[in-house]
Image (tube, rainbow, N blue to C red; front, top):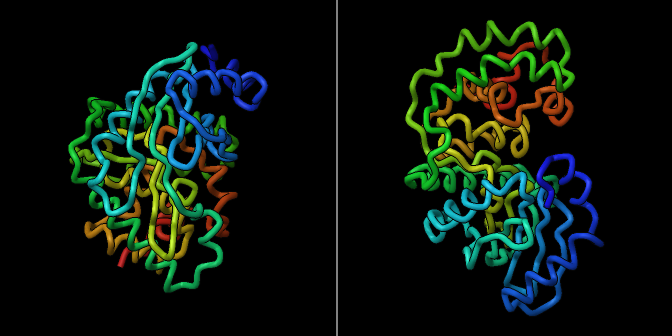
Length: 295
């Protein structure tokens, strides 16, 4: 059943336990073809034949089934990048599942390092255009219902969370003053994917051919979306980031994105500093390096 995170951690990598249930689910859904698990991802995801994908959700994450289902239904055919079409969703054997169409292309994780600067900018611009379209869609989800309360709650526990994740005290001591200096106001909230990164994008013949993994989607301020693109896509490449912002077509304040980097539900600044080393020592410097330039 995997009703706790510990139980899920114990079974998520055990194909001997998962695969019989996946095969049974395929029979129930009358899906034919070879079944192959994708290597990446925090949740078990399987390709079934050429056109189908099954994504599984343990009991502890059953609430994410409706998020993935409803957001995929809302965005299908409305973005300049393909997204999976939902065929079915439900529960089976104590687990949730979403049955969706299979996208085609190569992971941007594998493609990005080999792209020359002009092609990186082109792909980044396409990402910005996709986000601009996404943010015009009325969110089919209600959470968080009150953005200001969400931000206040994240702010209250921010230093303790970052400390628990191993952030150096020299960074920890900067957090209260930095957050206090950034006006997060009462922004319009949009439908945000929240994890638009190279691992969740596919490319084919120079064009984005897939955006997937919508289970962490939420109502959020626009700048919240750009935490992932800065840390896990452009990674301090100012030209690529400028192209992404040009494709997006709206102003994006790097200091606000940095504030949301600290307040993000999955924030782990110590990890981000290892992923995108810079030699910088201030949060203002990181804001400019990861999410700038400001000009």
